[in-house]
Image (tube, rainbow, N blue to C red; front, side, top):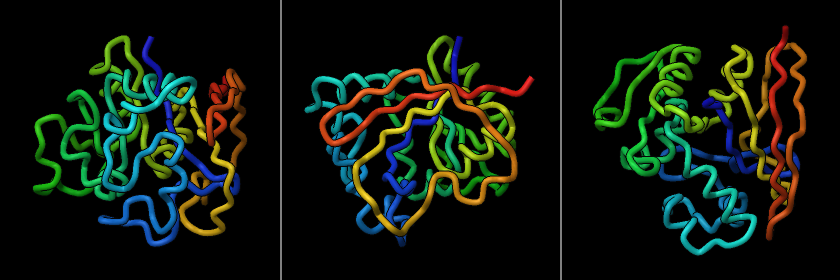
Length: 200
């Protein structure tokens, strides 16, 4: 069965991007430190980065690249330049947005969706038996709150950024239990996997 999975590199103090993130500076000032474990800079691609990896880090990157669809927020999509319309291997990309699509969202693999539940459902249908990769802090928070995020794969980087964009900033009140299912270390990173325990 397909799972919706957040893959996110994060500093020990909870940041997923440095300050001043935006188009042309997608991971913020100094945010490239969070991606050193797989060798991707702000202009790199996931596929290029994976090519030189080995061991645990390669296994983790291969898992991410085996996903069958992507759900992302519009801001994350814009900051990444839309991955040129192809996140990896031409898989469908579902962009969570309430605004009308513009020219940057007109690539064949890209579909705009206004509701996170619909986005995850459509992505799972498109992915078949493969997992769905979830991108972006706001999208992750919305999916968690809506009960449609199944797993979190956090790649914890041993650095304190001090400023930037936090993964779980401004979460609504509530209590979400996570079940640890895997933890292991690779060069420059600790890979942590959690299953979201859905209420009821």
